Amino acid sequence: IGITQTIKTGFLDKLTGGFTQAANATTLIFKALGNLIAQPSLDKLGGPVAIYDLSGQAAREGLLSVIALLAMLSINLGIVNLIPIPVLDGGKIVLNIVEALRGKPLSQEKEGILTLVGLVFMVVLMIAVTWNDILRAFIR
View: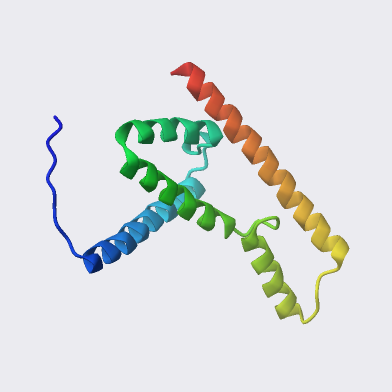
């Protein structure tokens, strides 16, 4: 309709509002990850093609939507990076905890194998998600 309401707020309201929105986005991402773990499905994942589509939608809606999408992607990337898969930071954290509990480091060979397995898993997942994105784009 094109009717908008302007709400005047102070700096502190804007600052706390930003943190609140980031916390809400983080909660949504954790819920989505929980749903994905409970009921795994590639249809619930979006890769570069889905991000491209979302970027176009956000651009049509305006600058605030683009900024919100960028914030959501940034938070999502940070959270996904903490998943305990050896090639990701979360995997490195788990390996460091294991080494601390054992009292000695893993051999470079074992750590290399774990990292390679994690890398292969991530590459296969990225290919599958991108393929699924492409199929979805043509089916619409």
